[in-house]
Image (cartoon, rainbow, N blue to C red; front, side, top):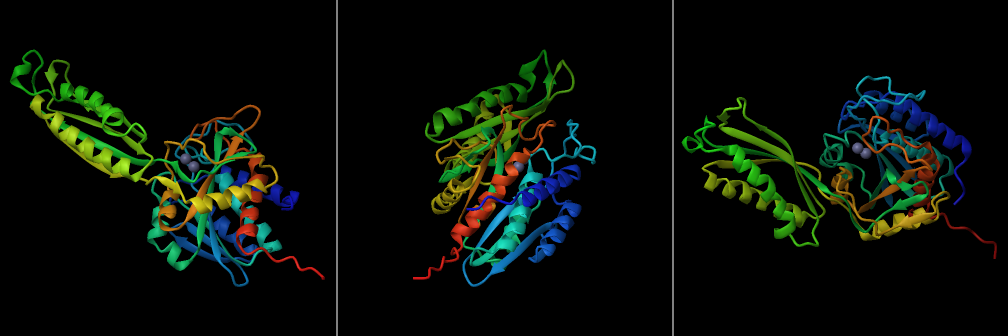
Length: 392
Ligand SMILES: [Zn+2]
Ligand SMILES: [Zn+2]
């Protein structure tokens, strides 16, 4: 493919910095959303607003042919930015610490370029999705009929990836990111004087055993080839130093790389909580806040995206077997509803920057050109490339 013209790259860098300076939390991306729809209209796209509240679909049609979707997330995080760059967040306590400003600018750049060049036959749906970080905007869009209203044969997304050098990308067939569920355990015993424990039933001691016992699920109950992380991260119990409290609360997060391991862990955790507490004279209950499913790439679309990456200027290495991340991503909901693939775009320059969700993080603008190039290459390759006519 042709390199992306410099004016489009520079324009996208400017948009990226403008979006960075005006970050908005999930489902409240009102200004970001208005800016995106205004730009898509100037490119001549059909613009559909209001999906999942602040979500936008820009549709670019070019003749009869298949349709594909490309998604960018547009929300920021409730973090106070510590950077001092000129485009620093102007909203105290809110910042683009995950690079969704960059993902949005890349997709806008691709929309502008493709609306001018149109070297494809079919339809491209540019999906600007709210609330990736908290409220599952991806799930809301699917529930609101994203794929019924905009039928497409495949859907794609990328995430900038600190830890992988600029120029390298990763797109595995199979899992890329883990499922995420939060759990809340209540242990109820009988409060008593701490010097006379026989008069009560101690939920703190039961909790101590439970914390270590939960770690045996991954090591002894699941196959060693299944991946799961159970992290107990919060404990609450007791007010007075000489009193055995009546209750203890434990909460944390469960991450898995397959739906099977996820279901197995949830069932085993319930069993441990209910049955391990019994001999302590304590009653255990577990409640769940179910989060994002496993982000699983479909093999054909992962291969299509890897192929597009190999012909993108600025992308020098395409990994297809990198270990998945145990973090979660709500693009998982889109991949449950439609074939597709998700790619990590390496983000580390010579001096690696801050990690995602860090107050010193800033999207690496070097990724704008290869990011736009990747989407252009994907569209031109997968949507019936315009036949080159010969004179013979
Ligand atoms: Zn994030
Ligand atoms: Zn993110």
